[in-house]
Length: 322
Image (cartoon, rainbow, N blue to C red):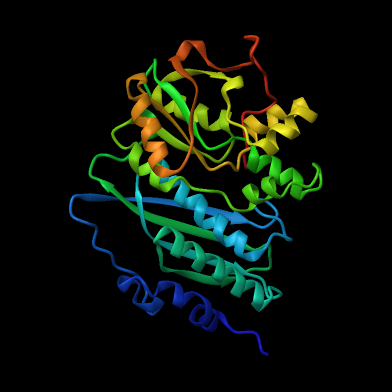
């Protein structure tokens, strides 16, 4: 079977993903249109992933697609936004199997159904390699209510959803540097964006972002924008059973857990007065939320303390491209 050109790829695999969005016009126009819901403002975020940097050549195509979409949905969740649509740019090599492209599209279709979002448009191009994909997600939030990094206040509790470290440990499993663990590998391949919970944080959280570059690095971003320091109690960190097994066997992995990234959990600060409301919101959303520390005056810095009260030091705070 001859290899389809970019227009046939769009028609066969990606136009069906736009069928639920009238303003996408079946991907047959130069742009999409969308009328925001009355009283709402748009929230836009974009992420790119590159083979060999954000995913491995052996990673399943459907998982690559789902991770790309979920990375962006995690950003929307951190802003308290409801997902509406997305734009997608794909850069394929001449040797990319058609079945890989089809599987990539099926992964997107599965998650569109899960999260109630549709493809609105994008671009399809060729590349000598590596494969790369860019996705822009669009959501909505009540006007003036988008959660930001900059609202944290000294005395706020620091919270995190889910468990920390699974994504980074899962990458080590994929690379053969840790023993096989289906649970950790699944968390690396397919993160779980906390969309419903993020929407319930509006009016409760003072500052919020998602943990993508590593807990310590992203905490640093929140503190920088909020003008605060932070104290983390390492013993309070929520760890999965699989992560705990790894840490018990190799205690130095605490640095990977706290700085490795790829968790896509929400890190946020809130007044101690709303702790019970946050617990309730987490229960309603089917997630866990754990208090892991506090925001402190900026002059006290950003520190993580073990159970004995000793400050931990790390070679790096988190992932950086450069």
